[in-house]
View (cartoon, rainbow, N blue to C red):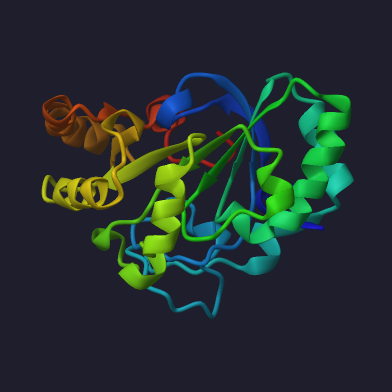
Length: 247
């Protein structure tokens, strides 16, 4: 079984849209959003996937969500069938932290590929969880977003050296860093140097849940990207649809 987030109570968050971030921005994609996360970013825009009533990990909104309304389970075959019924040939598995459910995802993808062998599979991950071998064999692209100090997560959990070394050496991985202040880029540069990450595989993305904030931060972040030859990525879905589920 897979544990998913919901768009409405009882309705799993599986939908077709455009990829809003990173190396595949703007491409038609089907999304499946899983529930649960091992990290707790203070600015997380999908806190409904992990900050359930009784979870006191800090978040700037300080809002707790009822698990029964915001989490649902599906069989791997049911999830595969729902994805297969949507048109896009690109699947983005997001969360939460999807790699916490590696074996079940591997079973789901096996069922999906049996009927949609052309599917391109991307996984969005915070980079702190190793991929399950059976799942790893079915993935075309990893969108890895290591969490910097401003996320509020302890570095020993969010930025474990063995995990960063793995992703730096993984040719399928693009590394995307969320930036709130110019000083955050200093952390990125330190990690780039420590793990020999090519600038061409690094994306910097402004933190924000509104178009106004993204535009304001994007102006100075774009200049920093040009200076260091990093890629810039916006958050297209926020500009198009706002901070909403199922988009």
